[in-house]
Length: 385
Image: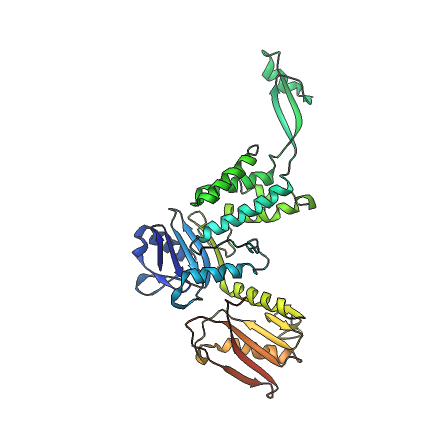
């Protein structure tokens, strides 16, 4: 474990930590672990242990636990974070897919601030395209006649004020649901952020949304979002807002009023990263291929290998630390055998595990299906470009 400040600690996945972080903060994380044992679990001696989920957990008192993947030798936090951010660029079907921008030149920059910066960058893009406005119906007491005079309300309110008019009219304003969500998110992130640059940008954006109301009942706003082509460029910002406002992490968790978490499953992250790498370098690459089932007359039990190349090579990723042959699970080999049986043209099948710097390397190869097909275990170096 690495202490950055009294309220900010870094750990590596599968690493344990004790009450040394502070009894109050440990208790908050302990409550989180009790509700979410797959994300944080108990280790020996009453310690807590991170699992294969990486990202941030921020407790109600402001304590931040940053969990990084186990990649670098001797748990080098800077190297681990650098590789993790590179992997995020390839994450599929999520608003937290990083662009090619170098969000981090110094790996000491907290992950939470990086996620906030991502959100602010998306708002900057939105502002360039234009903050949307719409006609909003207003009912007001005015000193001049505008729009439609509301007779009943006018009589009730202005019996002693002949100079006023109670009117109903449409005004073209940016005070729409989508902008209310964005402003409310900016307000929340201003409290969460401790970075001067991010705070400065948030203040600048809040000035641009000055005519927009902040919402206390923002949960209901998301159901009122306008969905059409004209609002398409708002989509990513609103999806990120949902994560920040409703605490809807990519990995569901309980106790959302007590913590704020953004967590990533390393199994999926590794799968997307390796798949993207092969997509860039080979033709006829299929990701998550679904052409076969274990039993052809059953809709269930689909066989979904991670990567199929030209229907001749299968590659399946496993985010596990493998030091020797005994670390390979039987279920992984059974799964590869099922692929080999159903994909008739496939001759080579690869089980891909991450290369950890302090791992001993070993070769594993076996012949199956009348020795016509081969299963190999290989390492994938996450630092490769």
